[in-house]
Amino acid sequence: MTKKVTTLAQYLELSEQEKLQLLHQDAVFVGKRIVSGQNAILFQLYGFYVEVVYQSYRREIASLTASDSADFLQPYIGQIFVRGLDHDKAEEGE
Image 1 (tube, helix red, strand yellow):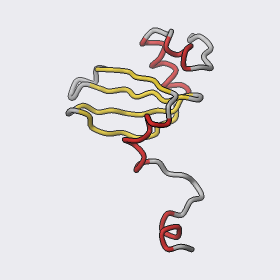
Image 2 (tube, one colour):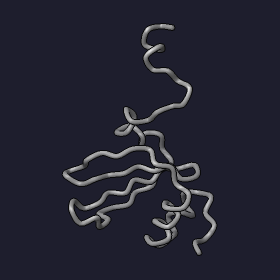
Image 3 (cartoon, one colour):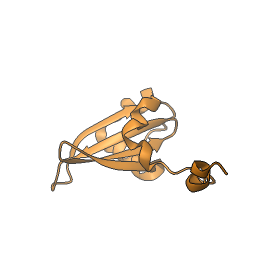
């Protein structure tokens, strides 16, 4: 069983295995992208974000980075969907 985590600082203290277990259990998928030929997936977990970069073809983790900065979302911003916001009507001025 993983430890109780409510803050980014507590998350950063966990082992990689515990971090991944929490992502699997509680995280919300935000988006994915390619970084230097590697697959990167961004998750929202509690009040912060976690990006997992996988080595191509191996599915091994190359890096796991966490941040509570909204700037962390920038590379994924085009993939974020907000329910109830009709993008076509907003562009038409309706």
